[in-house]
Length: 113
Image (cartoon, rainbow, N blue to C red; front, top):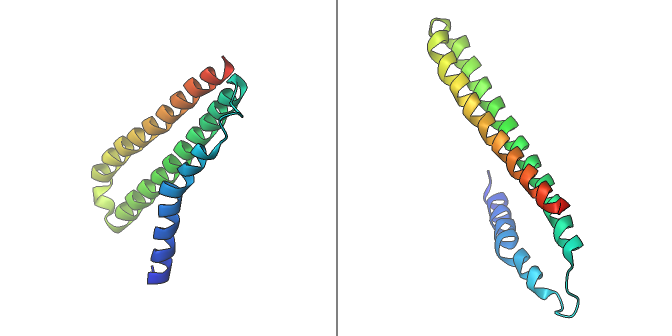
């Protein structure tokens, strides 16, 4: 990755981390939010939680499977020694996806009342 791309990524990360949350405090006190606003944001949070969880899990499982298949193709005799840790790793990655689903489920339950 070139230096300008690294600087752009660092600037974007800084802005997303430190400058974007400041907008939450910019709301006027008189506007006030009601329970429907909270429920809507909880539903949005549930959608984002499951989307990020599934995306990360899918990318992680794809990378793990690709690395294991590459290792097996280079050394077919080690397939048994590669396959077992790969399946264990895939199960652990899938457990994180299921945890994201549970969190999204709880957020959705909070959004309904």
